[in-house]
Length: 202
Length: 232
Image (cartoon, rainbow over all chains, first blue to last red; front, side, top):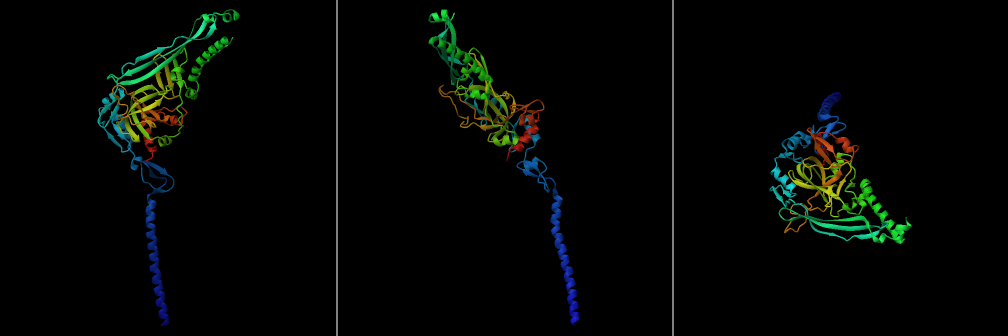
């Protein structure tokens, strides 16, 4: 009876061992399954988005992108077509191409008149088409004797200047400025007709 | 005797004065920057013209990423007009450039907007006929009608142009419309030229990394790289 009991215990042990090994194998397979799946998606190198750029990374990993466009970057050919083909306006932030809201000729004219263009209502603020500059005031000093430079020849200086203004066609003041000058010239001078210059230095 | 010494000194001073501006025009830009005379007075006596180099003092950049990182506004724009004017202290020239924004790559500007930027240098004719050409070495001046990729920043303290400088009763002075400037000087100017739309960098010399890298690159490739270099 005791032997039968031992035999039954042994059989139960064998059965248990057999079933637990199955469980171990099953759990091992279950554990292996995701790993196998991950390895299937990995490449070396792999690519991830950095900002709007698809950047290469060394080592193994799963790629997030195949091109910059997968990361939200704009299509360079759409951009080219917009800017240089259609001559429309491009926003690289939103990758949108839109026709000019205002007449580009009006904007060009505003720039020519140095106005401030408000593209929200296509209005040129404060344009000015300047007239020719004109002299407002001018002045000149009397010749100022500096010194002798030769027998009977003196060095003189004159200085002068002008105040200029420039108006817009509509009468507004566009600009004003001053200019000044200094001129030096030689001229006859009795002051230099003396013994030092005319006889001593001879 | 004293009179004669003074006379000789005056002549020497005049002679030196006539040499000075020529040297300033041909020498380093720093010399011109330190010169406190007005631009008009720097034209050599007896001469009608002055060529003078100016140094914008821009920090050099080596890569597009660095350039874009330092720059708050990047656009593709078409130049409508350029006008040169004397600065308020009358020592320098600045050229105001009207640019229509054709494409916004980065920053708070809208496509279609008309913006004004100031670039250093330019050509000016004084009322007495003297002429001055101030230039940043290597920088090709921007031409009306040209298309450019521009790296810009706001001019500190410059108010938005809209509503500014409105003249009333003929009393207001000419408004300075420039609210932007080049963020890194000529390094941030790339002309788009030719039927194939190639990029021509304006960096100061052919050895500059940006010039070496991007000269004659197609604008498609260049803008793609610009777009990639802008952090999001």
